[in-house]
Length: 325
Image (cartoon, rainbow, N blue to C red; front, side, top):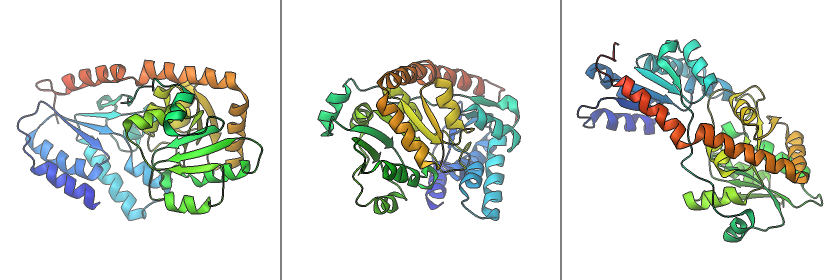
């Protein structure tokens, strides 16, 4: 909260000059709300780009008390209703914005996030040589934050289910977060799980290329609050995806639409372990899913596809007389 408020104060007191439009991003919701107040006073056309819904996220993860949730929902609704345009990154999120936060549907657009990464030119074996990884292991990589929302104890338990088997499978959790220390402690002594620190952009692409399967895992109950940012990079890497998520949630719908992976329910470690084994044994399936992933990225998640939509929306938002609030 201190981070968001100080960032908001900096934004409010900065020299904006006379922009044709201003784009505010949530998160950070509270900083965006502060900047929105100034933009309303100046009658500057304003677009809010929603990456996560705070009110939905708090409900799904159980964080905060009733008062905190009501306050977040009130601030989120106030902010989005005063936007000239709202951009959601998935249709289910857009529907929540309209129904739960009472934003007029005509102001809400859906533009998928794009990946700032492209597939590494290295082959799997070349990438592993560059990183010093064994070529003989079947690697399932989870890249990104290790927080409460990710529910990664599910992955530790899945690794435990495969521990001691005569199969060279390794789960790699690459990143950092509030839950990492606890996860490392709970997996002490296990051979088939490994933790790596976050890496830079070039090494990140190499790590994705070195994996056999890319994993997205979410806490049970998380379904519509956000689209994990790793999804675009996963698809761009051209690797099959296993999604251990709510089968009716946003992530499952994306993977299903792309036909790029296997979906297993959240918090079902044995199901996750079985999905890993299924793909380890089926090279043809891995190649088919990988091809579907890169095709979906090119059609729906490449910079060209999304930025063209953004250019159109910003032109319309900045049109003289377009801000009628």
